[in-house]
Image 1 (tube, rainbow, N blue to C red):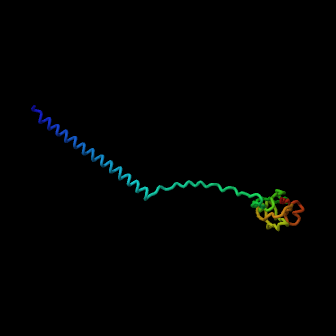
Image 2: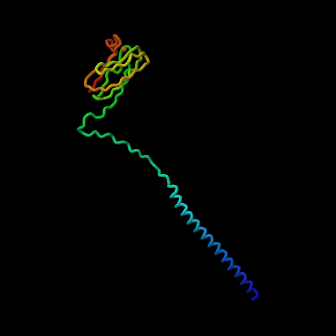
Image 3: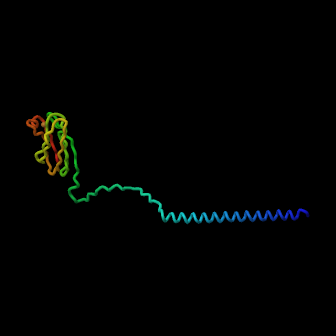
Length: 168
Ligand SMILES: [Cu+2]
């Protein structure tokens, strides 16, 4: 009986303690709710102001091969390059084959002596070059046939500085 008021006091303390914890808990919950809500809003506004950069994966689709529609003649001419080595007294190779309409690029590479490379039918003529030098000519093989390329330095053609350009 003596302890009753004490008990009630402790009970009151307990109650007030409970109330305190309750209010603290409530505040925490409110804070969490506010935080979450605010955070969401901030994220939303972030999304608006700073849009996520679009990842541009450049899938550069390879250009489809040019379709040659049947019936149309003269497909796009292809450039063909050759290196002809010239020396006393021969050319190598001694034969060059191309298709009519091809752009032909011939580089004369002189490895000995003084030479040039001439094709009369295509008005092709390199300058005369010395050993170690190179000279390039370019022309369109616009006619079918076999044409001799040769060195125009006196006597060289007769001594074997010649080859055959075959246009098919
Ligand atoms: Cu020559």
